[in-house]
Image (tube, rainbow, N blue to C red; front, side, top):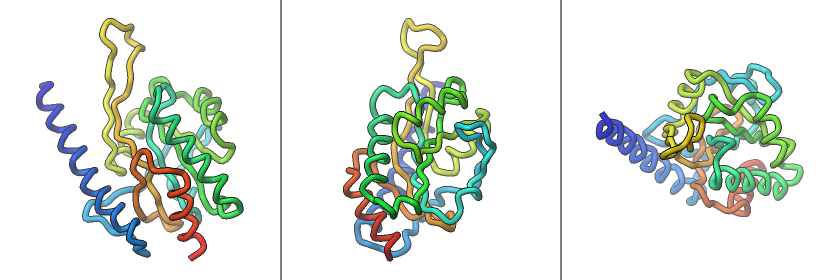
Amino acid sequence: MKARLIRIAAASAVGLVIAAGIAWWQVENAASTVQSSVPIGGPFTLTDHTGRTVTDADYRGKYLLVNFGYTYCPDVCPTELGTIARTLDLLGQQADKVQPLFISIDPERDTVAHLKDYVALFHPRLVGLTGTPEQVKAAAKAYRVYYAKAPQEGGKPGDYLMDHSSFLYLMGPDGRFLGVYPGGTSADRVAQDLGSRIAG
């Protein structure tokens, strides 16, 4: 059973890497519209950090920077959210046309109240989203996000990390997938690319 789960996770990760590679190559080459053979993004229904039920349609008209992670993440997630915050600052007035979203893949611990405190640490424009396990699973599936609970050896039931893929997704004002910024992409690079799209 464990070997089967590993194979499934590996296949999902490979598929996402291939799709992300294609999309990022097109972003790097200044394509006006990024296409991918693997559809990424789609409808979701989640709860934001104020307790309001929202769907993807609520954010139409803005570019979306979508990041999946969890608040107990020790390194990657806070780094990526810091990049988002810095990107918004670099964009200046153009940032009004951008909505950053942080979608939790750990709804068990990432309650609305906890998310509210967490996103406030990074940027006032950042919206945290959570939901039922089923809602989170559906959103992650739409974005081809891999995640799995990783219990800590000898730890308590609540002591676990979350293995997950780390990309910053760019969605257009019409909800279409435009590309991905791989983990570690600098805020300068993201702001440069996104700013040119907004201005164009």
